[in-house]
Amino acid sequence: MIEFALEKFPVRHTLDNGVQCLVRPLQRDDQAAFEKFHLSVPENERFLIKHRYVDSSLFSPAEEATSLDERLSLLAFADGQIVGHATLHQRPGGWKRHIGMVGVLTHPDFRGVGLSKHLIGELVDVARHAGLTRLEAEFNGARQVAIQGFKVAGFDEIARLPDYLQDMQAKTYDWVLLGMKIITDLENAGAGD
View 1 (cartoon, helix red, strand yellow):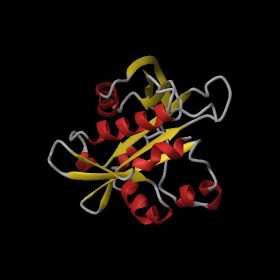
View 2 (cartoon, helix red, strand yellow):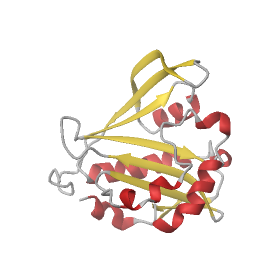
View 3 (cartoon, one colour):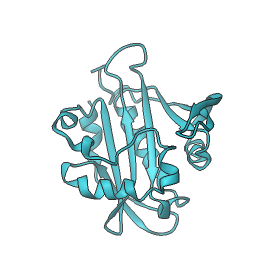
View 4 (cartoon, one colour):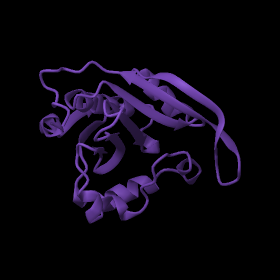
């Protein structure tokens, strides 16, 4: 059960620039700060992000009903503001149920200071506890810094499709899939629930 993995939160990390950050799961009262964080991402980068969160749909009653076993969002806070957002998506069944999909977005002022590494590490720990054995992350090939950050955290490039994605101006980009095999502590893992 993922709930057991969440008992350790909130956790603190010291970033490479000496700033302390607090990481914890998303809460309903985070809506205004969450939207402000996502709007802090420069407009020219927003189209590169797979999931768009600039509206309040994530905080709707239907989304609240989504089980933590399907999607977990972690937030990183520093200086009283959200500076990072990480997600772990799980499939409730099927042939990819052992594979989680992860994503991380950091505030422009908090890039290159180890925040992504800490957020990815927290997601890997939760994934292990949930019994997942692999993680994946998809990227627009233009997100080189994000791709490199995931590689530093232990992900490997497992697929690249040249000119597979297209923006609103019909400019094409590579589609990149990164993956990580994780070792699960079977004693603490859920029983496929």
